[in-house]
Length: 634
Image (cartoon, rainbow, N blue to C red; front, side, top):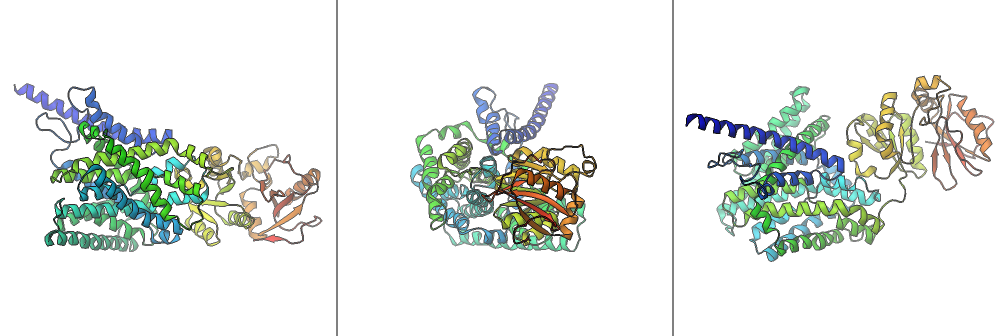
């Protein structure tokens, strides 16, 4: 008997070990699948969780393959008692802290009126409209209806980016969708947290007692006060270098967890609000380590999200999913995407420069994301535990909106964009990797002549100088996914790698040439290539006699551009050879009569030129060459 019991316990322990390993493996595998097929990660994560959870009961007699909550009767499951709730609470707290870090006051002020209204007026319309729809279509209590509407305010960059990454949208549309997702993420989370706290304090009914309202007030005071104090305290410790660099990220993580738990100890259910506020306050303080903290929290959030959505999807019961088969749930979904979302967009974009087709496309693309599904699961667990009526439908209801909108937008966004003609005819923007002085000089000239140029560099100082000159610039690491994930680079068609490192320039072309260089991808020649006249590289920039050093010296000593009229192809060849024979002048572009530019390659003397074209070169003005009347300089 004892041996049988020990064997049973051993088998259960092995099963739990298998389930824990499977959660991590399946979560990361789902993230990889999402990357491969270019869809939001939340889609394969939730589907995987449903497969190993409620859907597995369709072909297994022993219940779910993965049981998040421990069952004493069967000995199956992972988290006993309220442990799952605590794990989810802490994980969502960390994720929301990372989201709060991304909300900057300067970015809110910097966005256009349409984006500001979409985040404010549009969110209010969604909140009220979806709440009313849920109340009258489903017949649920007002509190649950408005908790649902608060949860679906959020779109989020993690679901928008994969959908739009491969669609060459007009810049204004891509910008609006990108910034809506970034700004509305923490705002929507904050609204959802506040509604949840209110439901908890009134007990889910209309118990608007003085005690309930006082408790809600305490949550607000502790959340905003403790969150602000914690953010300021961490900022001072970082500024005074009280935390060693190698412990910075881990110390921040420990502090966030400590603040979350401390807030819960002071006032029950105030932890989420506190960490959201802490993230928002800290994100608006100026200190150089913020980017490192963001990168660490982003990586941690990916791991937590991968684990959470396998667990939370698996925790849904099949009977809850069967509820969604009723027509009224489909009707609510259609009202949300076909009435409420367009109403919010059109009300927010009144008197804007957007066309009707622009507004229709923005109305169509509104997928709900990770924050909505994660918080819905957390709140659903807590409210069910507290016995709040209809709380059990919150999680499957929000999951229905999330899965439905992601599936719909992922499969139809490109077709709708094409039908509405909101895509670019040709990708003409130029991406320059390297924001040093010579690159900035080149970029400024192109911008002054009507071309869109974007500089990318890992050097913060170079980026800030470029921005000060009015050049669009991003600080990013070319060895990460920063560039690919940037929606606003969708209209890039030319790639120029101009760093001081041959290896970096080579990597840029190999990694990003097909993505951003559909019209041309070039790099500066190396010192070895410059010394070898027989090295006919087809991707070299400007001249085979000018590497990074020569390019930088010319930009330093003669920061001017000159335009030379071209009468014939033969004359062009003569001009190129004359310019390349002197290191003080470098040919850079051919300007066509329609104002477009052709990048000159180091060995491309066969470039098609005609009378009426112009040769643009940088450096010392060459004698004996007929120039236009004025010398162009920057």
